[in-house]
Image (cartoon, rainbow, N blue to C red; front, side):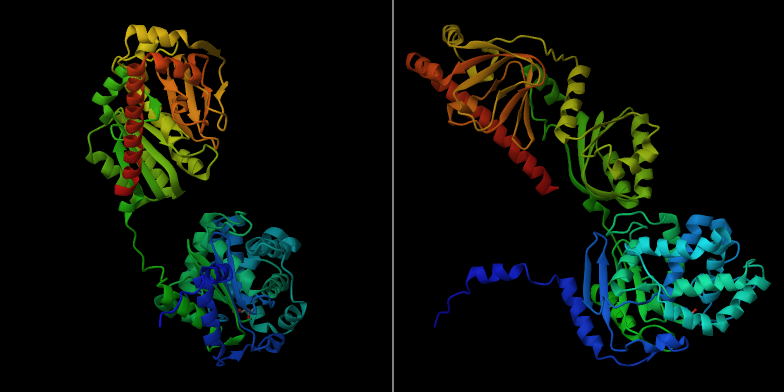
Length: 619
Ligand code: GLU
């Protein structure tokens, strides 16, 4: 028996409530690893032993600021060692790398987190083990005195995007029992790594470890690390990219205690764990993950948290060293103005020049990131063709520019300038981040032009070609009806009759001649000046100069579909449709010619429009 298909409305109704696949995956991980009951809650800090071993939360923050959550993601727990990367970043940013590196190393120790061993220079091995972290807190204390902890709390809050509090009970508990850390503190002072009051430094350290976070907070903090220091939820640049990159480096080599080597080998995502049961994983340029489950393995890492990270990395193939990129996708279209002229309607003399010299203007439309490899590829593609006089780089689909990409593109621009090629940028606003990054390098060159609209850029380059090859564009020139392509083939007598039915109109700059939506009761022949046709949403369809017609669709349609405005003062012959009907009765041959001319003009426009679509789909 034939079954009827399910009603369409049922599917569409479910759509909004369906889970994005990444959230679905996290749900599956949560369900699967909930059954994992191995490990033990840390109790060397007595208060930590009170944690509920059943708690399990996973949160993932994307770099566009979306946060996925499953399970106990709102349960607060102490950040413990996950504070270390952030305090290290803070020290780098506020005290300078030189000061920090003079007392703290960046080599993995291979030791447990609370090892009392120092390196050959009697410095902590790295800032991710207790000795290095206490040294970092000592540096902040030396600079900020009693304000040190508050400074740390606020910095961590900026990473999380909210004010963070302290678990006073855990703080008191560690402060009462943390003699091993005190021993490390005195060892550091003995070696002049700390020159301060050791109890005060330890107090900062214990407090920073007792800062309360949730799995969600950790995900956002991790995403901020993954996003070159910009919190993707608040948009704040929390730390410099320099400090963030250094921090991620030590997380990569030393973040997971004496499991760090194995971790980066298997999972390949910079991470840090804390004895409170949290794991923070930051995959640069991709995501931040926060998990919370208090039972720890023998290395001090959350058992379930490790499983989540391993599963995420394996399932989506996220190992950071398992990457490739194809620069050839960075060019979406590459053409000259022969295939894709501007929307400016050109006079016959201009058309002739442009038809001869169309190869002088090359347009390259770019997409994605201006990275080292993408710009390198573009520069080689450019060198491959004939050398044009103008190159337009359309950047409207460029989403990011790396510093390497900006530097390389500025070097390419410089070389083009030396060869006498003019560079034009389009699709980029001077207020955009891309502009700032690029102009950081190109600022001194000064030979770059920019137009927000690609069409305006092409039009400007065309004008330059017209001027260079002897053409002139006389905006003040007045044309006659006989020069109108729409009226080509009409006899002098027919033209005179038509002219007698027209009124001559004069317009001020920026005046609206035709408004979209109005009844189309006349057509116009531009005598002098420049007008443009735009859609109500602001898209410029065409620029017209003297000698061309507009509003001619009134011959076919009863209503105006676009606005026509003057660019400068202009004059036009206006022919009412009613008068055209009388003219038609007297001159049927002329009217047939006009309709044929109109069909030709429309066909040409269609050919151009198709070519534009083709350019994008075929490259
Ligand atoms: N406050 C803890 C300690 O220093 C942090 C340890 C950790 O999370 O690894 O013992």
